[in-house]
Amino acid sequence: MKVKYEGGQVLTDAMPDLKKTKFSLAGIVFFIFCAVSGGAFGIESIIPASGPGLTLVLLIVIPLMWALPMGLYVSELTNLAPVDSGPYVWMKMAFGEFWGFVFGLWMAVAWYLTGASYIVLATDYIGMYVDMSPTVALIVKFAIILVFTVVNLLGLEEVNVVNTIFTFIILAAFLAVGIVGLANWENNPFDPFMNVESGAFSSLGVGIAIGVWMFCGYTAIANLGGEIENPRIIPKGMKLCILVMVISYILPTLGGIVSTGPWSEWGTTIDYSTVLLTHVGKWAGVAFMIVAVISQLALVNATTATAARSFMILGKDHLCPKFLSTVSKNRKVPIWPIIILAVLNAVLVNLDFEILVIILSPLLFVCYTGFAVAFLKLRKLYPVEKRGDLYYVKGKLSPYYIVIAMLIIGIVGILMNGTEYFLLGYVLILFALLMYIICKKVYGGLSVENPLQYPLNPKTGLGKGDTVRVGRFFLIFGVLALGGSFFLRWYEGDWGHDYYLDLYGSGLISNWELMMTILTWLGVIMLALSIVLHLVGKKADPIPDDEECRVA
Image: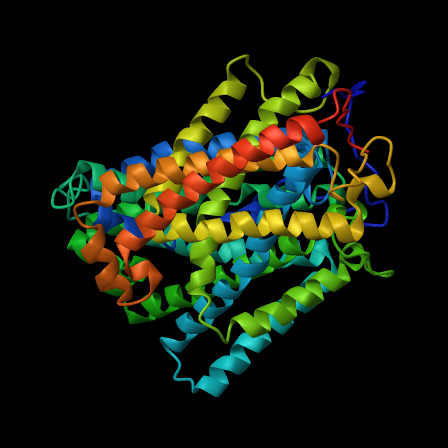
C-alpha cells in the first residue's frame, strides 16, 4: 500500500465538532490511571497462585514487557493521528478498512461491556458493610449509572475533575497500606519464592495471565485523541502513569506480604484492607473498603468516556449508524453513545454477564498485540524522519522491542488464560467478521465517499479484495485455534478434565475434552476456508495492485 505523506500530524480535523479540552500533565496521568487501574485490586489473586516472591518479580517484569511497550506505541500513534476512535483508525491506516473495522469493533464491544462489571463490584463492596435488599442494591446500581452518565454528558473536563479526586484518594489509601505494612515487617517476602505445589510453569503462567490484566487498557486515551487539545503531553503522562502504577502495585503488595500471612490465604481471607485492619484498627479497614468502592467508580467514569468515543470515526466512515457520531450542540460530546451505554449497563447489571467477560478476555490480548504490529507497519508508511517535532519512540531497535515483547506476553496471555476463555473468544472473533459483512452492505463503508479509491465488488457487495482479506482472517485465527488446541492439550492435559468439571459443573465449558475437540476442528475448518477463499479471491476478487491506504 502507498501513502501520500508529507509530514506532521494526520487526521487533525476528523471530527471538527468535538470540543477540545486542554489536559494538564496530572490530568492525563489521572485519566489513564482510572481507565487502566483504579488501584492494585486483583493482585491478591496472584500471590497464592504464583507465590509471594514471584508475584513481586512479575510486578517488575510485566510492566517492562507489556505496559511500557503498549504505552510507547499508544503515545506515538496518538501524536501521529490525534483523533477519536484511535485504535480503529490505526488499523485502518495500517491495513485498510476491513482490519480497521474488526479491531475497532472488538475494542468497542469490550469497552461497552466491561463497565457493568465495575458497577456490580462497587455495589458488592458496599454490600459488605451495608445490608441491602435486592431492590435497594438495584437502586444503588441505577444511581451509579445515572451519576456517571450525567458527568460524561457534561464533558471531558468534568470527567477528569472526578478522576483527579478519585485518584488522589486511591493512591493515598494504597500508600497507607504500604507504609503500615513495611512498618510492621514480620515475614520474608521471598519465602517461598513460588508456589511449589503448583510447579514453576503453572505458577509463572497463572501469574502472567492475571498480572497482564493489571497493566491493560492504555489504548483508552487514544479514543479521546481528537478532543485533547495538547496531545503532545500524552507521552510524558503515559510514562509517568506507568511508573505511578508500578509503585502503587509493588509498595502495598510488599507491605502486605511482609506484615500479614499466611501468603496462601491472600485473595480469600486476606487482602489489602487486612493490613490496616490488623495494624491500625477496624475503622482503617472499613475506610479502605470505601476506597475499593471509589476504585470501581473511577473505572466506571473513565470507561464510559472511552466507550462513548469508540464508534465516532466508524460512523463517519459509514461503517455503523450515523447517530453514533452525533455530537451535542452545547457540550459537544457524543450524546447518543453515552445514553446507549447507560441503558446497556442498566440491563447488564441485572444479568449474569460473567460469560461476556470470558468471551472478551482473549480478544483484548489479540487487539493489544495487533496494534503493536500496526505500529510497526505505520512506521514504514509514515516515516519518523518526516514527522518533524512530533513525538516518536527513539532508537532503531525500540520498535522491535515493542512488537516482540507484546507478541510474547500477548500469546502467553491468550493461551494461559484458560481453555474456556480461549474457545469462547472465537464467538466475538467470528461476530466481528459477520458484522463487517452486514455493515459494509448496509452502510457502504469508505466507498460511499470515495468509490474510486475504495471500489466495491458488485458480485459480493463488499470491498474489492475482501475475499482475499477474509481468507487471511481465517488463516490467522485458524492457525491460532489449531496451535492453541495442541498447546492446551499439553498444558492442561493432566488436570483440565477435573478442573473445568469442578469449576463449572455442567455445560460446554465444564467439558474440557469437548472444548479441545471443538478448538481442533474449528482450526481445521478455518484453515480450509482460508485456502478456498484465497484461491477464489486471487482469480475473482484480487486486492487492487494500486491500492492506496490514505487516512482521509
